[in-house]
Image 1: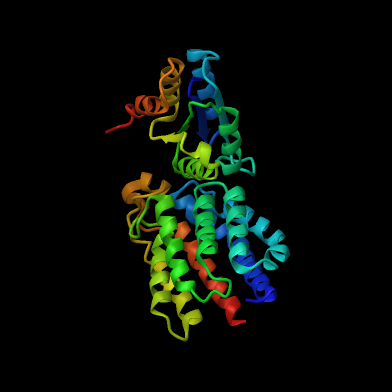
Image 2 (image 1 turned 30 degrees about the horizontal axis):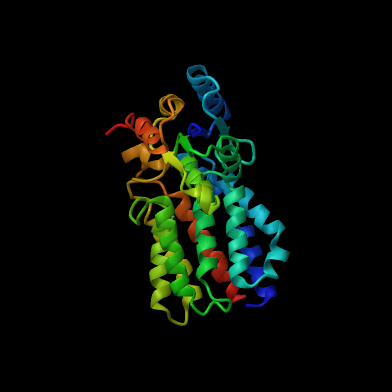
Length: 198
Length: 129
């Protein structure tokens, strides 16, 4: 991966998260404490500010640097969760990303362990797990398929009952709303794929 | 051996400070105590960096017990603990206990010189079974 491509990827993800901050906050106001948008925006503004320097690093180091920034800047539970995702991905991935599928699987496991959570609890894992499965199946049109898998997985959190995270306090009332973490995960997957398509 | 230190982590700086005031009233200066609340932007929330600083302020050779309020406080505290060096990491625990009662009970136990595991157990006895 060239620094130019990595730079484009980082900017694409940061810009998309920042542009959708209000939507993420609205989703979080329905089922959580209403800070997901503002927290993610703060984190990715920091990532965006350092994008040039980060893109010069080898891919594993760049991902770890992004993860560390998210941990330190985001706040809320999403900081350590997204931070763990990027840091674990950076730890496992080869500089040429040839083992992306296996590295992503390890990163999703790390998020499960950090959040003490499993898919089915109305969280970001309900998007990350199906994306990981689709990635594992491979194929030539991944950058087209993955955003579709991610978006429909985020939609599928709407009828779920939250049993983890702040939304779980709402019990039955969490049903009928999309999980904000699932939405932000789908957003990031779509941004990466779109940027890779050029 | 020094007494176990106590760290209070709330989404609200006022709750963190108020809980710390209640702990001080119970145990005076016999335990090291630090509190933190609010996210890096100054709103309600918690942040890994400020939790690490609180652990440093309350550091004791006997270890540190952390009391938290809601989900993100726990996740951020666990992350802060993992980022400590190897020598300290094993001597910090996040208690599964209500923040105010847990902090007061943990500090009272700590003020008697109890080891970290006992301090944690005393705080966690308050959790609904």
